[in-house]
Length: 200
Image 1 (tube, one colour):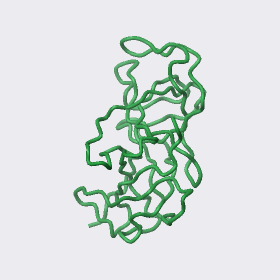
Image 2 (spheres, rainbow, N blue to C red):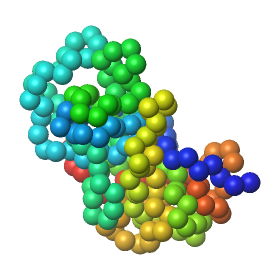
Image 3 (tube, rainbow, N blue to C red):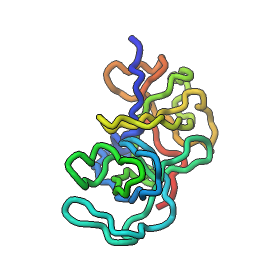
Image 4 (cartoon, one colour):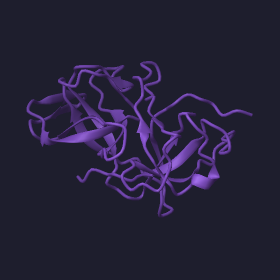
């Protein structure tokens, strides 16, 4: 049976040392100057500066300069990744699903600089990765937005790129051990680690 085809970005699922990922994220600001919306599963890049305004959230606020600022990452070789969005601080009842364009929001980030976090990501069906390419590196493919209903990203793994290239963004560990995931077909889900983490 063919694999499902819908992308969901990257999602942290476990640690490579055998422990479960605890779901303990770091917080970062996506400032209003970022004119595109962000979704759960989007990879991000740190901009090297703190925020300059007080960011409100339910229960309080983050003072100026208290959080690093991030923006959407860039797909392709040599482009580093600070982390992956796993949620958002709530600012109103429906605000945890995705971050609206051009708004100040605090994102919850699974940090790519933690070398033990393993992510799942679906390949984009531009080729068949297959089991022979387990252990190879591959780049990501930027999504075309995401779902405002589910909050899911549409980033995927570029199935045409797996090779032993140290400048590629992810390392393929194995096919994900999930129901109806066929590693011999296109659109498989893979477990990966970030090969080009951006230091904290």
